[in-house]
Image 1 (cartoon, rainbow, N blue to C red):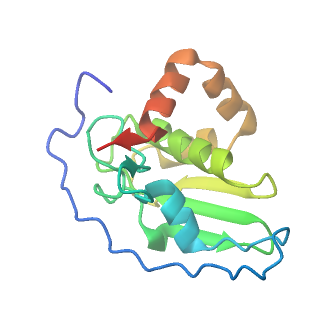
Image 2 (spheres, rainbow, N blue to C red):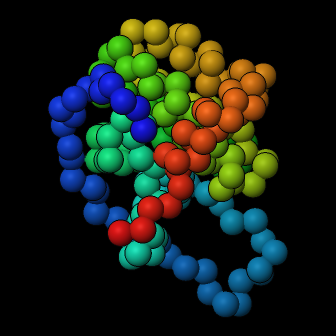
Image 3 (cartoon, one colour):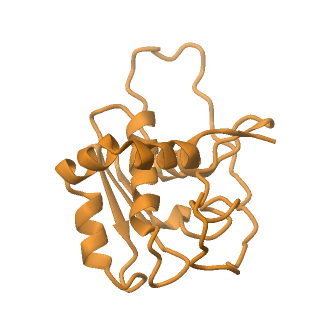
Length: 168
């Protein structure tokens, strides 16, 4: 992670209790396109699906998940499955967070690796939550900038570390 903490004492929240997702019946068409909803996107970004593997995206500065820091919440996710559009709005823990672009990049990479290619993913900083909100949003949603960032091996290693499963 990083050596110098920007927010040395973040507020830690309890993880939200999960609703049980309905499982399609065996008679369902296995080739049918299943709709994706807000809860599924939140689960991709923050859920413990298997008791031994935590799929939480970790904060680049702290050993906590983005859910525990309330950087991401289910309410801040918009999904239009019919149009293939997903918007995730996240809130950095401090207004001057230098890791905001890394956090947004982690969210984008996790969704791009988890979702079918038919989805357009839009990652945004919550309005008024970051000092350079417009610049961060521009970086996170510019294909060329994202591609260039992912060519940087140090940055890609940091992203992979943040989104990789951890074993409890």
